[in-house]
Image (tube, rainbow, N blue to C red):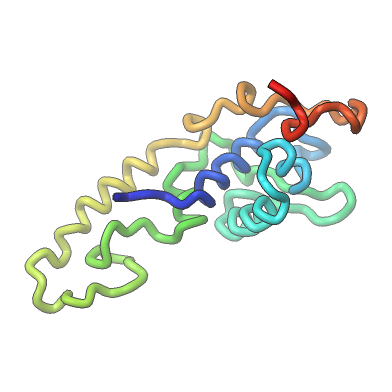
Length: 160
């Protein structure tokens, strides 16, 4: 079964939080704010932001007024980019070009190289799906009212 890790799911949530309207100064959100918004632990959010910054999907700024924001619009970030940022190169088997571990039977395998076209088709399909298509940020992440009472319900405290 081809399955992405939970961290990739969480990365899409974090990116969705950054795509949501109502960011602070300069469009920045702190990791604490993202953690509240996505209901993920702050250490998890911080780890994901670090990986997303390294991949060029997110920009960060340190300091009191710091935070992070999308490096480009959600419509310009592909699902393939998010997956590769968290999971590494997309490779269905060890038989495809760019796989992290070489195939152990590569020299005598009649399938050698045949998986490349399948792998390429999957990469292209994931490359055509954008973050904007994956998320409806206004529906899932309502704007944060920064002037509200700090004791007001947050997503973690709210009762449905």
